[in-house]
Length: 181
Image (tube, rainbow, N blue to C red; front, top):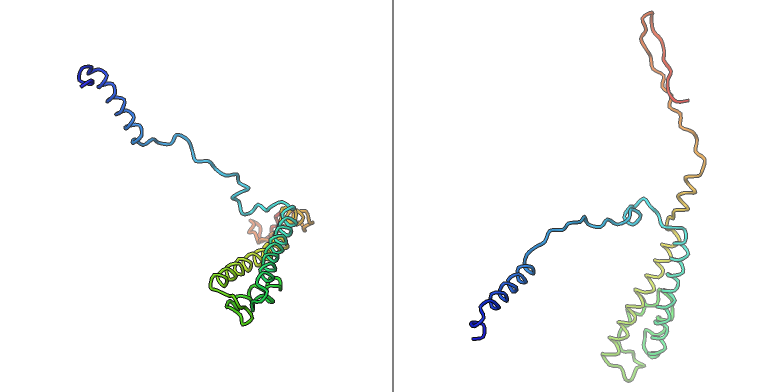
């Protein structure tokens, strides 16, 4: 009833609502180009800096040691499990322990939850230790910008382009020699 007495306000509110809905629903075209990443990030011919090697080696060693510590703690936490001795071996231990994911004869209070938890922790340790070793291998063999610039600075024999071509002449035959000397 109040809106019928003042039709100007009602029309103004409806117009504002229509503008709001139209602005939300309508599409807008982009007025700028997509951002382009720097060439170093996307160019495969660019190599990482020389500091990459020791960093990868240290990170890989840290990851391997960290996950080995978790496997070692798991082996002492469930010391009566058949897989406990295998988990004390770095890197290969989790692979060997996954074959022994059951309740051992020495375990008196073993249940399914414990077996599942041991298996999950062993699997994560397996992935972590293997990933750490792979990171160390990558660090040992990754090409860096210093190794490629050292190769570029190595002396190369100069390239000689010489061509000997038989050339017809008005007074007979001849030979032309041309190229870069």
